[in-house]
Length: 525
Ligand code: CAO
Image (cartoon, rainbow, N blue to C red; front, top):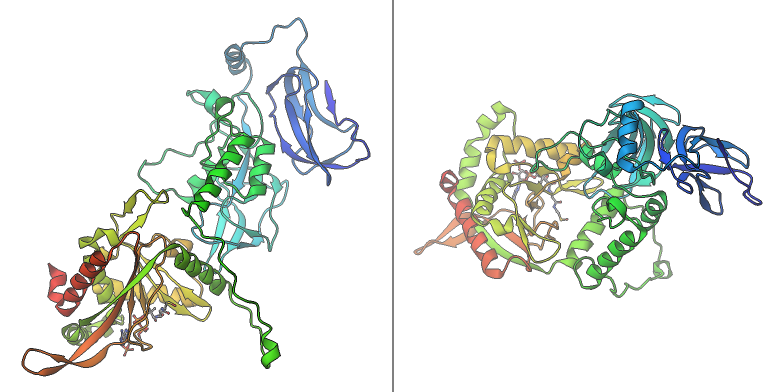
């Protein structure tokens, strides 16, 4: 039986925006087949009869009008008893080839803190046949660019972004019809359809199993987002509210996410904000002034890095109660040792500055004081202590402040740290940092020593809980018990999140750190 678009009143041209059933599905009367959308409303086209969907005559993006055949259903006769679900599944498996394609939404994966990432290239168009790893889009943040490639081979059904569009994690990039492997064992009824409201069992879209303690990779995030079991209306609501469906607990049939689930999730988030768990809000605004009334002015565009950096600093400043503790380290011996390394450093082609020693010393101090290598859990009832030490280093670039991260800094020697500081700061300055270079920091250092200053209050790079500010090394008279000696003294400023670190913790950390810097033989302990 041909299924056609019904009379749509005064609307004569609408777009197919969702496919709710796949060829081979058994449909009951009123089960949705597709969703169409005009500029006024969207509506589902339901099955007028029960039966098996023999063919779909449209793809997402097609424009249709009244009378357009969208599908063919092999109707079940009235005498034919409605098959039991399990029997139906068994019969299908025996008599028909397994359904071998599936619609898959490709979403922007985890891109760290990056917001308002811009699509700078769209490499596919509707109808393209693509292979695994074929480029879909190229994104660019203020810090790096990133290619999003296809995880499955298939056909592009719809492209949801265009060049210049701003996206963030979870934004829909494209919908693919992908060739899927046959279901092998398992309870197929628990497997979900990525984007359609269908009740028939679906092939497994799970990515290959990963180790439970492996970090979630962008690839896994993409597959996880696609696996969400929710209908088109719920997905649309989630998109409108800017909510990620991944992670929302579905209370509907077979754990399907309902509109109420989305609303409950949003409500819980808002209540969390109101109770101060995240964000602040309600701050009095700074007065808007017409500066030109008082003299000539010039308005200059801020770079994207400056804008995002300002947001991050503001977020940290208003959410974290900051305390800054100042101290001084006598690094005369360290400086003598560093100077003695100059010839060797030149041969190795690296420049050794005090910063490499500071990173090394901080790693020792963090291992000894793990509370500073931690983050406050969002429930504010737990502390997440990290068993790895990744040091973020603030780098001043023409575009603004960037904080690349030296991973596993505690496992690297002074030569390796020096080389990595040079490499990451150069990449930061020429905008060649990868997203990964900017993620995973556990503690940060902001060194203004080369510029000057006797102390400052750095802002914690939240959700880290502490940051070390470094000012200019000075030669000062230091009393040795019988006379003043000229010593090289390094001013240090530790800012910390007072919800996690109390004054005594901060004090102990600084005493330990300055002791190491004053006698670097302690680095060997
Ligand atoms: N006191 C005195 N001199 C110092 C010093 C200190 N605390 N730290 C470094 N120096 C010296 C170095 O030894 C080097 O001298 P030589 O050229 O004679 O060897 C010189 O200053 C320049 O150092 P550098 O800046 O090239 O290297 P670095 O390892 O000290 O720092 C980096 C690297 C990337 C951190 C730095 O270039 C930078 O960008 N700093 C700015 C960070 C910033 O803006 N923080 C503010 C964040 S809050 O807005």
